[in-house]
Image: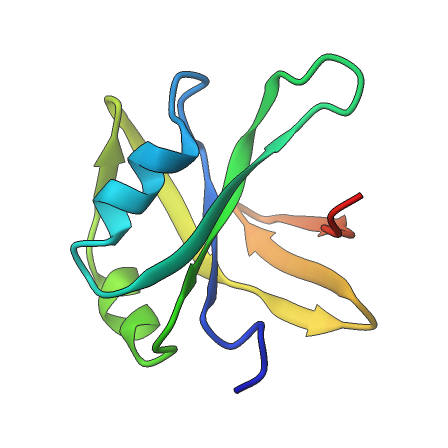
Amino acid sequence: MDSDQGKLFIGGISWDTTEDKLKEHFGNYGDALSTSIMREKNTGKPRGFGFVVFADPNILDRVLEDKHVIDGRTCNRQKGITECGYYVMHWMSTIILGSFRNN
């Protein structure tokens, strides 16, 4: 399996939401292999978006059908498109480009 096939972009996350909270919420749909919240490099503060990776990429369609409220915030969700190691997501008429590699 391509490692990005089961990856889901989650936007509009509350500043209080943790990786564990994402895993708990999305784990109700199936095996959530990993969750990550993107943070500012210098401050460590959350940037308001993250990713969930599911073991079974077929789960994504079901997840996308539902509305998701976590910590009182309605989250946006989108399948990521991978090109050249970068993720491109269309989110609320904005394109987000970024490299999400573990440093």
